[in-house]
Length: 146
Image (cartoon, rainbow, N blue to C red; front, top):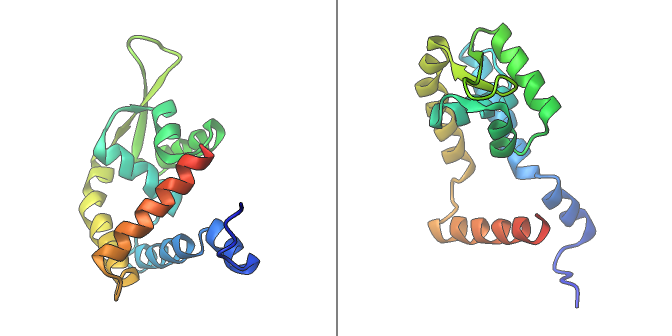
């Protein structure tokens, strides 16, 4: 039996990530106000590299849920901004490893602070229990479709 707890208009908003889009827009605005000239997509790549510098482009695809052409374009643009550098793998020269520049490392603290500030604004009035339920539900949706 299908689960019809949503009206269609609510379901489409849920599926298209209305809340995540609003958070991304707010964070992008904060970056711009601080003179940080990177997109949310570029920031998401940097975020994963801050956690694990020297990832392969394929690992970045997996971590960010993006396809190879998208990651290639993002890395190209981050290279132009001198935030990352591609280095051919020593084991397999067909594989590019992506490394952060010092400038990118210097952006980490400021951008993470802005991201945490934005997330706190977004979660104002939301209890810890509600956040946990939302995470659980979204994980179930993801598991059902992967």
